[in-house]
Image (cartoon, rainbow over all chains, first blue to last red; front, top):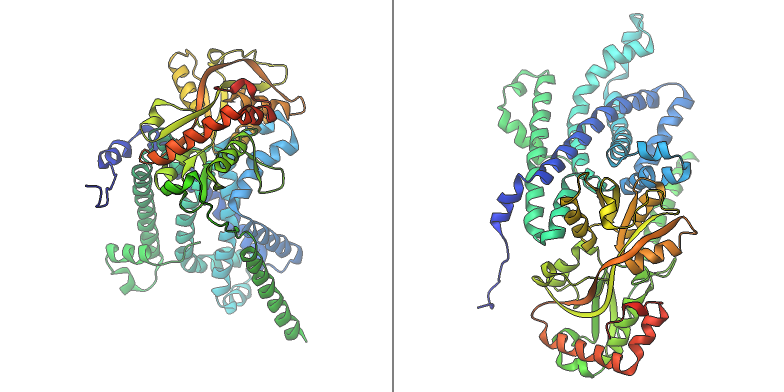
Length: 253
Length: 279
C-alpha cells in the first residue's frame, strides 16, 4: 500500500504543543525582544536620522558610518560578536555574566533596528519640502525646534508603513538568536523536536504563532496609519480592508 | 568629470559582485568517479557509486574539519572511508546539524548517519543502527575544578552548557528530576559553542561524549580538564533507514571484514581511541 504517498503528519501533536510551556516561553521571549528592540531602536534611529541630515559634518559622518557598518554585516555575526566575541576579548567575569542570551539579543537587535530605522526616518524627513524648514525658521524657531515641531510630525506619516514592515521583519529575524541559546520561538520548537523528532509538526506550531504575532503587528500598523492620515475618506475605509492592505504589501528584508 | 568618476565606481561595484558570484560557482564541483562494480552493486543506495554519509562535523576527534580547510577528518571519517573501500564505492560527507540528522536521513538526503550517534531506544524507534564503537559521557570543567564536580549528581544547582539533541541533554534532564536544586541547562547547536561558554565562565561544566570532552581538554592549553570518570558507556551506531536492509547487511559485513583484518584496530589506534573498541 506504500505505492501512494505515505504522509506522516501527526495533527494531534500540533494541538498538543501549541500551548506547550516551552513554546509559550518562546513566544514571550520573541515578543519581549521584538518590542523592546523596536522601542530602543526607534529612539536611537530617530537620533541617527537627525544627525544624518544635520549640517554638522562629523555628526552626519558618524551616523552614516554606523548605518554602513550595521547594515553591511549579518545579524548572525553581530549576535556572535556580542555574546561570544566581546566577552572573550574583554575577559571580565562581570561583563560576561552581564551579557546573558536575552541581553545580548536585545542589544544586537536594538542596534540593528536603529540602523534600519535611521534610513526610514531620514527618507521621511527628506520627503518633507525644504520650504517647511525655511518657514519654521522664519518664525524664529531653531533648527532643532523646527525639526521637533514641524518636520518630524509630518515625517511620521511617511515613516509608519515602512517601519511596521521593519518590525515584522525583525520579529522573524529574532529566530537567528538560536546561536546564542536564546530560547525564542524557533529555538523552543527545535528543543522539542530534537527529542521527539516531530519536525514538521513543531515547525507548524512555530509558524502558527509567528502568523498570530505578525498579524497583530499588522493590525496595530493599520490602526496607526488610519489615525495619522489627514485625508478623511481614507479614514472611512474599514479596518479589515486596511489590515489586508498592510498584510499583503511590503518588501521583506 | 564627477559623473565619470561616479559611473566608473558604479561599474567597479557591479564587477566586484559579479566576480564574487563567478568565484563561488567555479570551485566546489565534486569530481564524479566512475561506478565501480563491487559488493555495492546490489544495494540500491550505492547504485550511484557513492556512500553518502550525514554527519555534524564539529565533534573532534570523531569528526571535524582539518583546521582552515573543508577536509573532514576523524574516527568516523576514517572508518567510513575504510567501509566504502571495502564496498568499492566512494564516500561523500554531508555536514548537517546534529538535531536534524535523523530527519534528513529519513528524507533520503544521505544513505547513512555517522556522527558519534549513541544508540538509544528512542532513536531506534526512528532508524536502525549498526554498532561500531563505544563511549560514555565525560564532564568538562575549568582547570582545577573550582566547583568540585565529580559526577552527574554534582551538577545539581550548577549551570551546564550542552549540545542540542544529544544524549547528554537526556541525561541532564533525567538527573534534574532528582535534583533538589535544578541544573540550569543551556543548549547550543554545536559542541564548540557550548565549550566556549565554559571557557568564558558562563557555564560551570559541559557534558559531551568522553573522547570529545577529553580532546577539548587536551586542546585547551590547560584551561579545561575532565572531572571524574566517564559514565553510561553506550555504543555508537551507523544510522540507517529502516527499509535499507540490503545496505545494512553490506555495511555489517564490511565492518566485520575490517575487524577481522585488523584495520579496525589500526584506525582506532590512529586516533588513540582503542578504549572504545567493540571487538
